Image 1 (cartoon, rainbow, N blue to C red):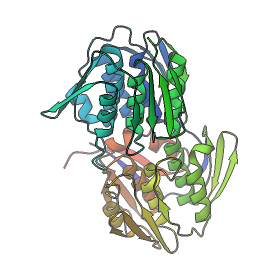
Image 2 (image 1 turned 30 degrees about the vertical axis):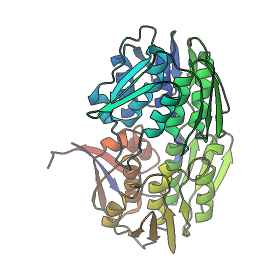
Image 3 (image 1 turned 30 degrees about the horizontal axis):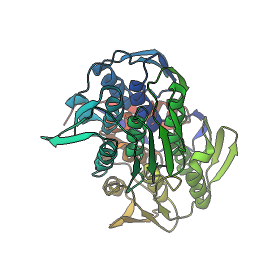
Image 4 (image 1 turned 60 degrees about the horizontal axis):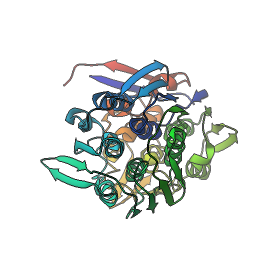
Length: 421
């Protein structure tokens, strides 16, 4: 079993480059199933979730080659399987994103209910509602979902909630549907725009991504092309908070600052200096961080994927902060672990009241999900003594060599193999 050990560290200093976005790479890898010629993807992060998605594509008949660091070649011309294996689906919820492409290419898709981080129920009813509107028949039994159709036909689809996954899956299914599909109340995340840009390079006809209305005109087939994945705004935010919590001075490179406006705004409210310069931001910490309130919202609001990391920072701020979670109901699973480190946090429904403490203390803690794991590492950077973070497979699902890159900034952090208890 692997753990990450974190010791109280000096203020972080230096430069870190941000990888391609996990939440963009996964749907784009799934969308590669729609192409019938070679596809080259650049800046694909070397993380566990990407490995699993590549294995999903191979299991469906696609050829997937890792050519170089961050460079992947895919050819789905001979796609020959519509069933996603249970063992792969159980490891990662994003495996569900192959349903839309499989419906478009083969007219059928079968998979088990998805796994992933335990941060809420995240029902897939919006995905299925979209497929049904396009003419697919849906059957669910014994934990399996099967969708099949003779022909997908465009329709107008209203999403009850701007779900990112449902927006992506419906977009992909509709690329080759007959006629026009309109998705209303669509998610507006930058990753949706990246998916649209990629699909259009393959020959799709999609417009409106980044707004609440997306229009897709069906085409007969998609070809190939090359595409560079956008930078990961959540990884960028995590390293920005690492600089802030340690009172450091870090340049975070390869970012699109417009994608992280809410994080920049809240860091400035805390008292941190954030200097934007082209595709990089410089974060200079403060010795007197102030409490701020946060409410997570769909994009362009404050990202739910940054709430846990920001809460780690708030435990060190003077005064009381309130964090309101509106996207996932189980986003506070990391709170008990932070409390083990001496944090003063009380949960009241969808709100967490965080009172800043003079000093966190190192403890043995476990990552309950990907972002919770990052938050515990951040807290460990300023906690007295040593923090031992377990269940780090969650962290490896979304961060490339997080400990090595923090070491380069001066952090005292390492990975260790221990015997399972």
